[in-house]
Image (tube, rainbow, N blue to C red; front, top):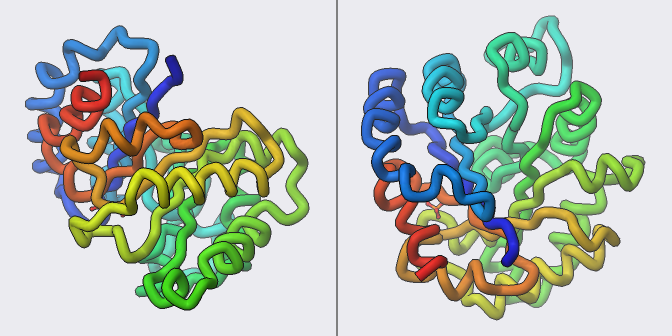
Amino acid sequence: MKKIYLYGNWKMNMTVAETKKFFDGFESAYAPYKNDAGLEVGVFAPFTSLWALADCAKKAGIVFGAENVYSEASGAFTGEVSIPMLQEIGIKYVILGHSERRHIFNEPDEMIAKKVKAVLNANMIPVLCYGETLDERESGHTFDVMGRQLSTAIDGLNPDDVKKIIYAYEPVWAIGTGKSASSEQAQEVCGWSRNLLGIKDVVILYGGSVKASNAKELLSMQDIDGALVGGAALKPESFLDIYKAFKA
Ligand code: PGA
């Protein structure tokens, strides 16, 4: 049985108080799975909640990380947060290239690639998101767009580094819409991505409206190693119900 990665992206939600409250309820929801070697749970929080998240997640025994970082170590980059700042509070994982960073904040492929390299150079793990918009899919450009996003992000990396990255295919049209990709659509892209990356045992997640009701179908697909979950990750029960549904 393959290992399932269940990662939650809190986006711009969860204050310090809310982070602590989440973990008050997490322990009992997670208890049945705590020793399940087939599951890796992770939570990604806004910068201001990371200190509290690091503390709570360590106690709970789960992975934790940031939702973004800048590629330079220090300097005149008002409003940005650096890798050493994250390392100081024990952060090892960072989501990069989320569609909201790409589309709302206009982060280009090249900027994301720089961040990927900087994070790997710091011995941290990027969770690299990529995916097409509805227009791109409907006009038949899905694979060009994802090929460009993925190839730019891994350009110049050695195979060891390519393998360290956790990939998350997140079609933009499925994020926060309640309309997940079908398991066939998600499998098609994740399988295609594995071929493009050229490494068989790389970790590839699917994200976009994952919830308990569609978890089994999606997570049973051969090339889908887990889920990056937004809305359903804000409550411990709805988050862990995704794994429960997969196991049922
Ligand atoms: P969603 O978000 O589960 O709310 O669709 C997923 C994501 O953006 O990572």
